[in-house]
Amino acid sequence: MEHSPQSEATRLLLDLSSGNDSAAEALFPLIYEDLRGIASAYLLREKSGHTLQATALVHEAYLRLVDVGANSIESRAHFFRLAARAMRRLLVDHARGKAAAKRGANPVFQTQSSLNNVSVWTQDDIIELDDALSTLASHDDRKARLVELRFFGGLSIEEAASALEIGHSTAERDWKFAKAWLANQLGRSE
Image 1 (cartoon, rainbow, N blue to C red):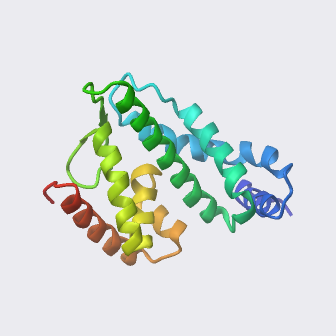
Image 2 (image 1 turned 90 degrees about the horizontal axis):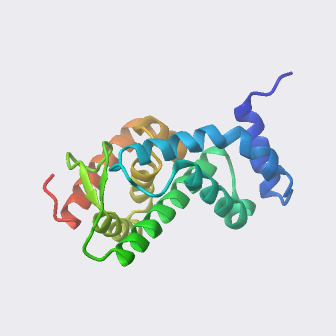
């Protein structure tokens, strides 16, 4: 019986979770294209001249996942939730570093999957969004994870619902609420 790349990735994730460090090397080629697609989709929406490249984002996120979360990965969906969180942390850290290095320059991020119809995000906005997401997570972690998957992970509503193991209509309701809540927190009109 042949194994699909997805089932092989799931098996390797479980092996990695149980302490088999060699699984990380075999896993990377199987999930690389998915991670690269997520990173590329996010970075393509940013203003040209961004110094963070998709390949670097994928590699750094993967290294963080393997180093920090390897023994707690429960499934392929869980892995991609962790990947979205790792990419969020990396992008926010990058924005903070750039903002600190270039006080006043404030480079702009462009995004099509913004929380609203707002398509321009500054580095300060990304940092404010991260802070607001942390506050939202303290009230409703699932809604915060949904935003993280959609905004930082680049997942569609269907993909995010699957990763969170919730129904499509629940994800739609959560997304609508989270967008309104975050728009209010960020002082943006809904």
